[in-house]
Length: 126
Length: 126
DNA sequence: CCTAGTGTCTTGCTTTTTGCAAGTTACTAT
DNA sequence: ATAGTAACTTGCAAAAAGCAAGACACTAGG
Image (cartoon, rainbow over all chains, first blue to last red; front, side, top):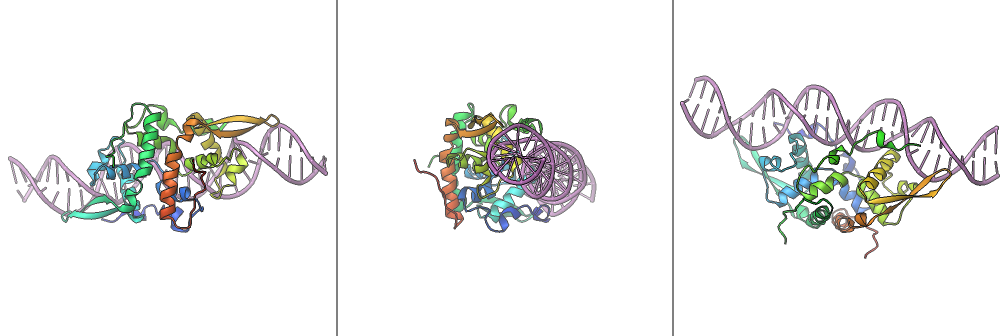
């Protein structure tokens, strides 16, 4: 069963050089969409398997999840390891590089809590 | 000259309630694309007019810029005031709510500088 | 042996968004 | 009258998002 990399080789926007000398722009080439930081959030929460990600309250579509997991591994923000051979199945873990996004997620969560009453973050404080 | 709100009433994804009780998800409904945080960065840098935004190194397309300025004002992250009457022209300023995203931008910039060598942030440190 | 269930994807398709490039407007300057 | 300017809008093609169903390779149970 093939990966979906062939379906939309969409990461061309950061495959060739940076579009800007700004680190925010470079970071957003990886993170700037609705779902990527949410997948990272779930990894921070300790989720590691497909069903755990899809069970999150936002209801990520499975083709989007598959795409983001591939891209995040390509960018070195998560790593995958098989946990079963028949059928082959992967679990995902955040990497050191990915963990270094925690300040960004915490800052975003704090801003979100302040400006979207009724929302509540559930990060484990360091 | 009409606004482009009619062209794509696209903020329906956050017009009706939150898609999730998570503040990160709520924040990403506003910020989760490639350009929005870059426009905010430019506002932090003190840019306020159209030509200043388009002069940034990323080369934001003007229809995207127009769209994001409208949405950011709708969300209360910037305010616009006329600086000329003939023809009518607006300049944009970040609001308090928008300034409260500075920790997020700084965290993102720091992560980007570390992982994209050659990039350099230019924020005024508080 | 057959059927149902499961988890992890892929696929087909429609809708939405992105973004290119050119055009429009209402002015000012010469 | 013409050219230039700033701030957009527009038409269109391409890309991405996302719905819903399907495929696969197993396991469990009768």
